[in-house]
Length: 232
Image 1: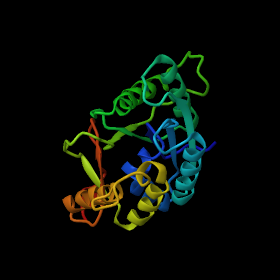
Image 2: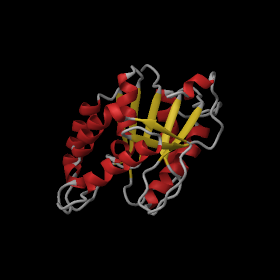
Image 3: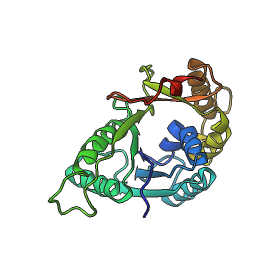
Image 4: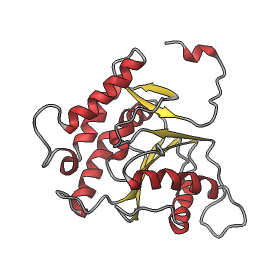
């Protein structure tokens, strides 16, 4: 397959849409190749099933128009950065060869999200190894960015915020595809789960003087070729 520009690593189906759905839609609109690898099926859950989650994921994928999507089928609720999980994700990285990887922020109350963040670090390194029995050729993704998929009521400082104002409706349509997780059985009075997701994007947009935004953290310096790219 042709290499991806961006690979989103999502602990569960719906995490990518909730956290970076606007970024995905915006990037695709700019003709970038964007893929998602869901690490787990996300099941069991109170109102979901394997078949229903697959249908919801397919609907969200179509709404966004993703270039590529796959699911590793790792264990939900007990995700661990094991050597076998590292191998599987490293082989995905070697297959799709992304220039940018988007991974969950490393601090959260959800153990799967914390494990996923660590797993991405490990797999990104393993993907570049030569003299390996892994599938695919060695590859090092040049940039790893972390998105906020956080259940803790904390407020990490973003390295930058991407303006997703033009794509917020596409993001919210994709989010609403996951009815079993975000709508069914949830409180119907304001603020709903859907309200919270939209309002977080509104807050981050406010932080950069735009309507809606999505935050990212980068642990390394980001290089610029011109200060003009910082002009609004």
